[in-house]
Amino acid sequence: MRTRQFSRILVLGLLAGVLCACTLSPKQADTQMASDELLAQQLATVERALAQAPAGERTVLYLGSAQHSQSLAFQRDVLLVQKQLQTVNPRLQSIILSNEMRTSRLVYPFATLHTLTQAFDRIASWSKKYPLTVVVLVTTHGHVDILSSNVANEPYTPIQTRHLRLWLDALGRTPSALILSSCYSGSFLPALAATDRIVLTAAAANRNSFGCNYESDNTHFVGELFGTGFDPAKTWQQNFDRTRHGIEKKEVAMGLAPSSNPQHSVPKALADRSVADFLRP
Image (tube, rainbow, N blue to C red; front, side):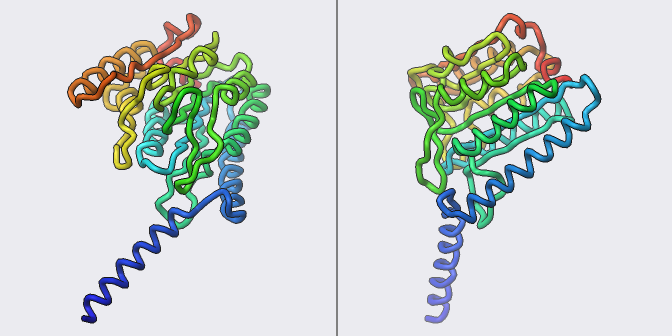
């Protein structure tokens, strides 16, 4: 009897710990303050690196936003891309936002409209002072003109085309690459394509993307683009074409239909540059 009671208490204790870990929310003033402090620390680190960079050296800045708390795949996407970019350019500077929380304290700032606005405002100010190349990944569930933001299983204001266009246009002629891994992400492409901006999306405007189950290693798009086949010696176009072909094969093998049909825009000015060259200091 005592053993049974102990087991029940242990299970309840574990459940309480899980629930505690899942309740970190921007609605809690102290938790939002902790998120703001984490973001301030990341921004300060980037600021110091920019100030210390040799004159004329281009800094590559990565902003990764894992915006949905209901899958581990999104944070894994953000960290995979950071790892691969850092392999190409060890001086990479990163801003990491994530709503995936399995601990009782924040590890990364929340990925919400609030934090993204703060991050992009600072990046825009840096772009006027320092030579930058910017890579942005947003990975989440989505729909037409919607990139979901979900914290502690609660929805927050989604990111829409108007937000991304405002933020990215504020970078002026800064070379940039925008990667969107979500269902219907192709709906963002027409309004966001620009002469100095690469845009890669996981799906067409009217299609689902795949690989966002809770325990997935990565979304299919990011896993294929930045996984073992990622080749920085090749162009973004070549890496995208390989990714699209690999995803088509995977979707057929898994019986996933209709196909996600990833989309892209690579401007002429950047078409012949390898990824490694794009990420060069």
